[in-house]
Image 1: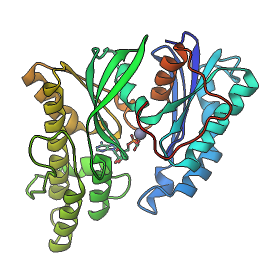
Image 2 (image 1 turned 90 degrees about the horizontal axis):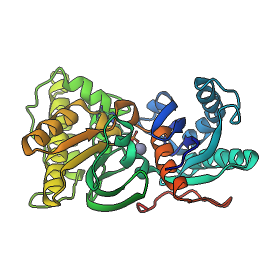
Image 3 (image 1 turned 120 degrees about the vertical axis):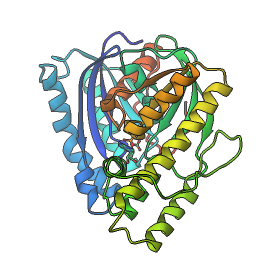
Image 4 (image 1 turned 90 degrees about the vertical axis):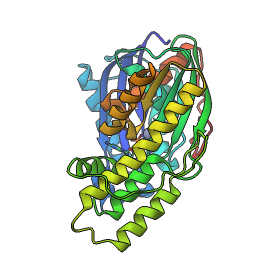
Length: 338
Ligand code: KG4
Ligand code: ZN
């Protein structure tokens, strides 16, 4: 792994984040969220997101530097720069990538582009524990739902094999859509979790694909929630429906993750991505793993939703192996795992 201090930038969606790391140690992780801005539209508006990143990128960098008692990259002893360059909203990514390039150019520092999902996959390494080699990672976010076999270590680098993935919507999207239908606002996952605490899961929603698969499908679930909302008087039972929504998504994720981990003879499962912040998902997976004798390592809460610390860790692994981006580093809306 790269031995010097790394400055990391994340701007792929609706959080502007800047982190400073030394190896696995996170010295600063500042996240400026645009949730308030996008709430009025019930989702992320790409053009508005890009403009908000332009406004907040340098203030966020400034705050991160101050957290380590510095005013400049030189004072903070930064030796390398990592930036999310794919996948994501291109306008949003461009802001972070352009800032990272300018800083690397001006301070003569090595630069590396990081795949956003690789950042999520490695975020469990930011906990106190070290996932075993190989292990399975369930990465569940607003745009991704994948079960991935992760082979390697922070020192030698990683290889990824997708064991299962969604064939339509992501789990976070399902949470967000259900929250919108229930009038619980944006972002939806945390709102559903709050409402579900006061409810009992009574309604039954479909769990998508049946049979022995490791893939996921949430489109039928979304349609069923939409139909339920049309056909029922929600003024009485929003919390109960929220509890059903959470129960359904959590059961599917738990069942598939356990099936995939056991089928591939892996003894360790990690959990990452925005939806990994869900308390019921964390506790159900902990219960299932303890029953099967598997080790479960969850990304710490602050590193579940989008953050630059996880990008810095993935960047440290790549810079450590000698990887360098050219000044032509591009931003991509979609990209396979490296
Ligand atoms: O990883 P992330 O911050 O951004 C993407 O890369 O997409 O994930 C955002 C997703 C959103 O769909 C949000 O509703 C969901 O994570 N989320 C949650 C919770 N907190 C955030 N879902 C369920 N329960 C939560 N507590
Ligand atoms: Zn993410």
